Every structure is written in structure tokens, then in C-alpha cells.
Image (cartoon, rainbow, N blue to C red; front, side):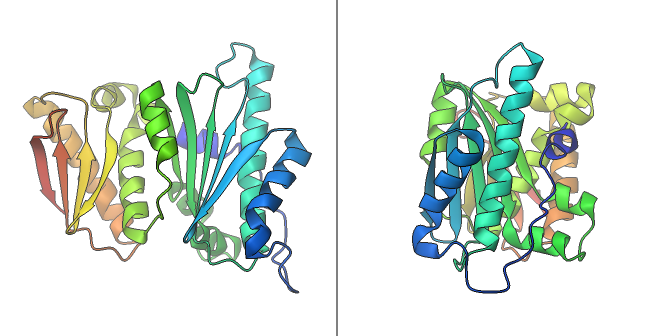
Amino acid sequence: MKKLLLLLIPPMFFMMSCGGPTYPQQSAAESLKQLLKKETGVDSDVFIVGNTIYLDMQIDGLLSIEEQDFKSSQEVFSAAVSNITRVVLSGDSQIKYMTVNAYPPEQNLLYRHIQNIDDFKAFYYGRISRDDYFSRNVLEIKSGKENVRKILSDKSEITQDSFAAMLIVSEVDNLVYKNPFLGTVINSLSLSYGGIENGTLIINTKASKMDSETKMILENALLKSARNFLKKYDTSIKKIEVLDVSGRLSLSLNV
């Protein structure tokens, strides 16, 4: 499912600017809003926080039962990802991370894409493979009005530690799309990134308790994902702790 959704993102066919910046830092946010409005007719909000750029937009059709409506919503989302990458790469800002948040009018669902700009450059110049590049994208679908609004309100600067951590959580969470049986176990936990404290990745779960089989499945999934991403990024993460719905420690892993 993750690769299927990522394949909806069109190839970035533009070339890196060889002259002066097309989108200077001081006007990058407004330029991005105007570009997306011109191409899709959709209004958006753009925020630049340190090295991170956020694009939030309402898209009709995300929850439509009509295939054409959903297809149209995907085209708008793809245009947003393409445009934000274009503006960053054709500008003079120090932006390293981009986040696109899309939601229906009710704001009860969030379609979210987070990317490291350096990873795109590595793919663009052939330093990493297509599959490796796709694996380095955080692609999430979150539900629940309170949860969606909480995520949208968080406009903090992304670090290499937090990006790698979100990749780990996202990959495990997306097992539901790769193996429906394994995914049923993972999905019931409702995992979410909780932050990093003294080299420890905190993962929250809405579950009140886990049986031994669930713990074993989650432990194996987290270790596999962590060892995959932590060798690709220089981070301070040495440990993972999973906290239950009451904030109690459910699982502790050294990575």
C-alpha cells in the first residue's frame, strides 16, 4: 500500500536551477501557495519552521465513494508534493524536510507525506535506488478529529533523529498494507511517534496491554525497521520504548 500510494506521486521532471534562485527564501511560502492554487485551484497554508516546510490543505474527495473524486484528490496531493519539492530545490532556503498534510472538510482523516530533501537529491542523482528512495518517505493515514488536529497543530522543526524515528514507526504501522494478518495485530495498537528523550525513541500505543505474542511481533518489526533506517542516518537513537495508553512501559528494546 505504501509503495502504491507513493507511485501516485509524479516523477520530478524539473531540472535544478543553475542561475539565481527562482523562489527566494523570503517569498517561498507565498510562491508555493500561489503555484498550487494556479495548478489545482486548491487553497493551502504554508509554514516554514527552521529547516522544515509544512503545506496544509483541504481536499474534497478523499472520503468519496466515487472513484473519479478520489482520483482527483490524489492528483491534487501529487501536485502539492511536486510543487513543494520544486520550490525548495529552486530556491535558496536551508530547508531540509518537507511535510504535506491533506484532509477532508471534516478534518477527521489526515493523509500525510514527509520527506528528507537530501534523500530526493540522492535519488535524483542516482546515488540511491528507486526502491530505497521510496522506503525513505513517511507516508501515513491518520484518523480521528482530535488526533488530526493535534498533528496539524504541531509545526516543530524536524531533525535527523526525529525523521528517522518517524520512518521506523511509519514502516511498522504500514505493515497492515503488506500483510493483512500481521497488520491486524499492529493496527490494533494504533502506534504513534512520541518523541526522543536522551537517545530513546518513545512510541505511544492506544492499547492498554499486550499479550506475549503481540509483544514478540511488535519487537521483531521494530528491531527490523530500526536496524534498517538507523544505518542510513546518523542519529542518537540507541533504544526504543513503547508506552501503553496510560503511559506505562510495555516494551523496551536496545537497537
